[in-house]
Image (tube, rainbow, N blue to C red; front, top):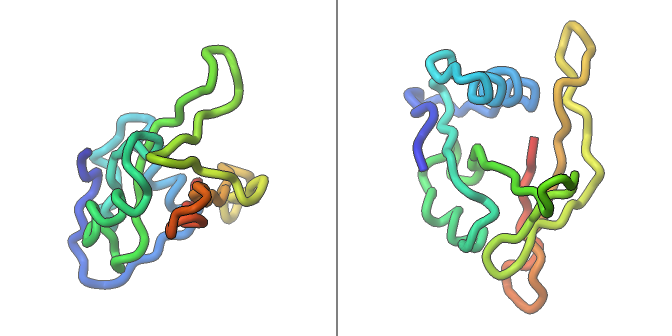
Length: 136
């Protein structure tokens, strides 16, 4: 669990989906950490592990630009070696998709560069049922 880019500004910064993909995800995937913007903290953490969502948010409280949103690089885990479906287990429940995804389009070239999906935590009988996660 490391910070990919420490926040150095007191100004509130809310990145657009296109910026998250082009400026953060692309640089991370291609090993260009030195090119990552320094106006937002991006964490690395396993969002499909043993901890529950509320425990993760509490552990990283203060790591976000406004105290609510966390930006986290996580690795997806396939359900089977050759399959196309992913394991969504987390803590005592799972991430359930709320939608099929919304295309993220690059300005100027009008090209789809990613997909944004919304997930919620599901575990019947807990007070945290329905906790949401956006994924780009």
